Length: 122
Image (cartoon, rainbow, N blue to C red; front, side):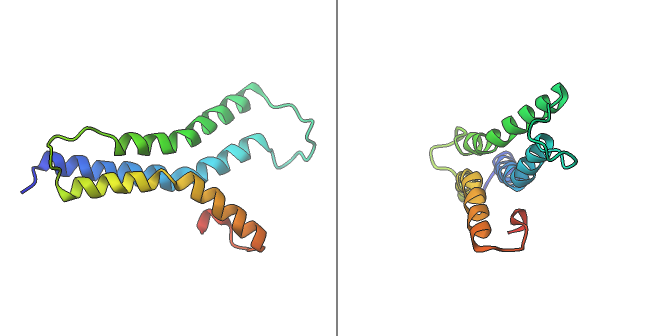
């Protein structure tokens, strides 16, 4: 039987990994929105310092998604033989590491295929 502490920690690993993976497309959309204002098509438009700080924060957040999932997957175990729920949580966290690569891959493939569906929803 599993203790509630290990059950709680494996549940938190799954939720943190899933949340980080789920918000990744919107972090990238927010980054692109912050640096490319829709009202100006001129590429010579100067960015304000606030926009630069926001863009830098969003870019750091985008790079943090796989790092957060790697940290969740590489946590130390309490016992030599972990319960199946903890093993599944770690595998899910490792699977979540590939989210940025898969998102970009499917975005490029749908663009090349001429899909009209916005790629954050695929």
